[in-house]
Length: 258
Image 1 (cartoon, rainbow, N blue to C red):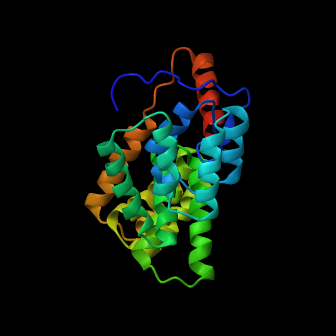
Image 2: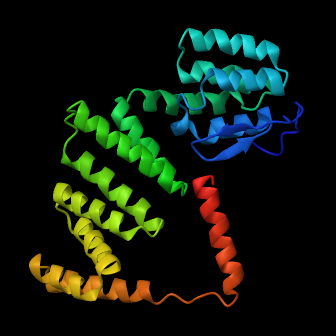
């Protein structure tokens, strides 16, 4: 895609709400942008009848609605379903759509539980931490209920990334629990350091020092941790604290959708 795409269809009076990223869309151009840039989030939360009804009633795209409704009933794959949407306004070139469709096919070939984890990782990368945590929790639940043997590396990675999401929300007790479980699965230096850092942030220096002793942390790793903690604690407050707090509040509401 290059340059600007002029709005070819009138904007909707009532937006379509996309829960995955907690945002509203008002036009088919915005819908195409979302579909193209968020292929790992394309699931039943957006590929559904509600979307089609919105396109028919708000954008007056009746022919497109009829075509997509047939594809939805036939349960076509995601690539086949979204192609007519892009073609409606010639949003993608042939090569761009082919490249995107190849990524979609590789994604759809993965087991469902792996696709869920990828979705969670994608949400973390885009700072949608609450949604990511929900996806990780569902993934872990599915793993337990279906007795899916994905290995300790898979489970540990979920706990680690969920810990990062909790830490980004400053929910350090929850992050501590996740990092502990991650280390129990992974047994790596990196997972241990994340756990130690969460202990320091959640329970304080004495608990951190005690854990270093109990876990027999080697001197080099301890020095690394002490240095990283010192650097993390050297945070300067913005001069305009009120504006900074307002910005942080806006970011929180953007992330949570509240």
